[in-house]
Image 1 (cartoon, one colour):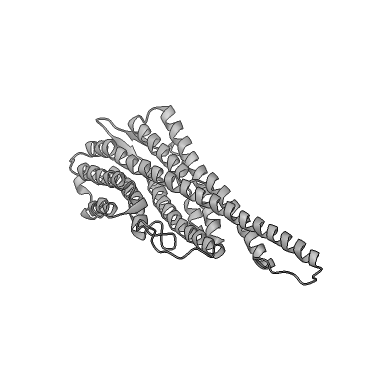
Image 2 (cartoon, rainbow, N blue to C red):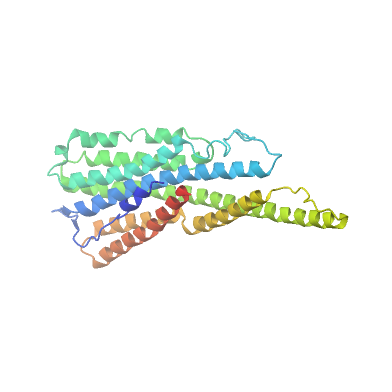
Length: 333
């Protein structure tokens, strides 16, 4: 994970100056928070796609560590069901890209809101701006091609992406900005939320799998180390009873034992960090921020909705910063 991303996560700014009034005379001046929102989605998509990639790397490391200490196991590229093993990839580049594109789509949606808010009439928006959304029309097809574990939520991802593109397309069909913005908020919000909720479910499954894998590796390496101690003790006792001054052979050398112990330690730290810094918790904060942004847009004169929005944005920052720092550190190691 690129540690430069850390500087990107000044995600949301205080929005006390935001004015969103959806009425017969719509006044919208929310360029700054929408810019922060789109930057957040863009940075989040980079972090989450990198998270998937890193988990592929950790999965391969786990797989080959198992082979290293279990001499009876073979390298297999696919399992009995024909699915790729960790020797290859748990999540394909295509699967990771589709998920990243789904988050980028939400970012593009936010960009289009900001552009529309600054336009007198929807039809004055350049064709190139509208064309940006057209680039996501094939996203549902990309999800449809996925197979195996990474295809578990492909229908939900595809539907959310398709609905969001449709909402933006419908937004531009309106000739009045007020109606166009209302269309974007009312119909775009649930589509964007569907993508985020699906991503959260996806990452919950993935996160639990990773924690199980790390816990399994910790137990396995600890057993290997402890079994070696038992063998060394037995060999030492046997050699002493025979009066031999030569060290008897043992399963692992001293340097190998130290290596195993270091791996036990690092796996324990990785497991602990993975439990604390869960990606689905980050997405939960994104969903809450989305909900509160929508609520504020619908009722901008409510002081409570503004307070809730600010609180959810602060929570989002608080959750994503340690997540980024932890996985950036893991990548460096």
